[in-house]
Image 1 (cartoon, rainbow over the protein chains, first blue to last red):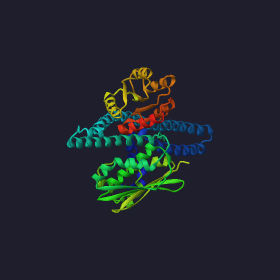
Image 2 (cartoon, chains in turn yellow, purple):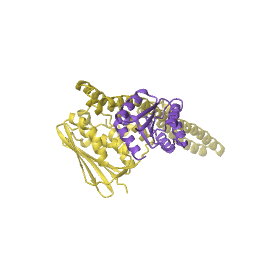
Image 3 (tube, chains in turn yellow, blue):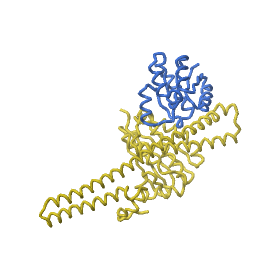
Image 4 (cartoon, rainbow over the protein chains, first blue to last red):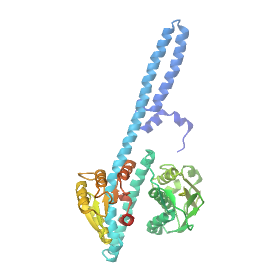
Length: 317
Length: 123
């Protein structure tokens, strides 16, 4: 829904959004403080001009200044309450995510053993059982990704995302990630091709986090490919940086949604039409990670023709 | 045959890791709490230790600190395998001497095997 200029004056709406009472709402208290300042100035002027005694004017200013002090304190307390509530929310997310990850990793590892190549060779599983287990594995991975996204957004907002840079090959990482996407992409009738320049230098970055960026961008490209098509990934060296680019022939992004595409929780109308799944945090996370690396991320898109998303990373010197 | 000590209080994870290490022809030593883990490490001097951080009796940070202080175990590479991912946890574990820090939920057993082999190779 479009915001009107006068929405900023609707205190009931603004304070309702914070879920606090009016007396704890910073905007309301700020308005009251502003009114009192105006009244104070006027009262001081009237008192000073109506009476000969300057003490009376000084006393009225003092009384109103005390009221201002009390309201100022209420504003600070209201902010403190908001900050504490945000902190406890972050801690809650952190604790719950850990609690969720423990059973998820236990399921993942048990399935890893059952589905491992050796289990296959010894013919311990029939095809039907294998298909069921693979489906469970896929859903478990989806849950792990959702928990990771939740934690990552929390860390970005708390400014607690610390990078652990190492030198690694962006090409090798991309190929590893694409291996995990083989089944997902063929189920979506999409073929992924990686075209990387020979002798690409190493990049200096947090490999785990760049892996997540590649996963988010690939995930989107596959999900929004609406017909049988090809996705191209190119990796090129530009001297001081390496550019990673993914080109799909999917649904594309409407022009009206383009400015908000990297916003947290934003999902394009087009995206919701083709895919009900998705929380709208993938591109927000990707942009935050690339920015933290001193890189750049961007995109171009044409409706019904496809999108190109790219990022660049500095090369290890 | 390489000996790997896995200090982890979740038995199902111990079992899964054990099967995978056996496939790679490695021997697994298991400890379900920090204290047992320390004792086994001192007695058996394994080639590598996989260490969880949230453990009964002695937590992973204490175990890591004591292993790195002891001349008999200080050179054993330690891979921290946990589901904690706070920046302070990672920094603390690496500062105490962990070789690497992996989040369990984000790695398949095959990935972890590759890390174990790579650490053993560079030992």
